[in-house]
Image: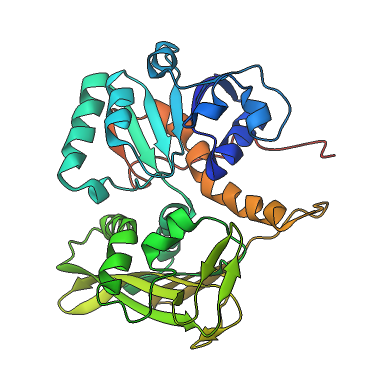
Length: 352
């Protein structure tokens, strides 16, 4: 079948989702929600830097729901829970990269999401690269060990060229290194990683006694001028190392850690193994590193060209899940509920 898709927003990740849907032979874009007024009435392809698609962006939610698509690809930077519930109640499935892995991030509102799915007969699934796909990778890796004592996921990235203060400031970047509530800022800003811990625990079939967040920081020793006219002053946070840890009987059994830095004036000066490291401690111990490279024929003309490749790996786990989500029973679905997600419609037999 061909899956009829409505795209929700065309921001950094949304643009890559539109591109992926447009190129996928099993999908058809039928509508798009424009978050900003200046995008209303414009061709979605034009908004995303590709050829015109014959689909006009709109902020008319009713009109988009009336299209009755098979799935909404929801890439809004921060989730609007009321809108998501409205989509689900209308009987429309959602795949999303917006603060959704298990739904526990939303606290008591998770019950509202589940109720909306039941009312509409719809399904919601959330992913990204981390949290999201990399937890699936860890779960699959754990299947190689006859005994497991700990599952660890580490993301280590130099984000100097990434222009998204709105998503990085909540992690603690740019704050004075001695701000009293700094740990609380990072704990709240990175809380979605808690859902990643829960996802792995569920896959292992264990109930955690506690989930703890530990944070370390590094400061810039000189004013750091970043893309987007953002400056981190000397003595402010330019490195964040946050770990969310699942505890059983006082011992760490699951860890999801993000280690991010900006610039070359960091104190302490962290070295990073760029990419993702998954380590399943056990019998045997399985260690895998994952990094991402541009295609052989890639010609990058600017830093933005390279950043967009990274955004693709955020968008694609949700896109790949669409057929399984459409076929799934109503409710909140995670990687632990869905079958193997197959990359349909992406093989190119005559690459240019």
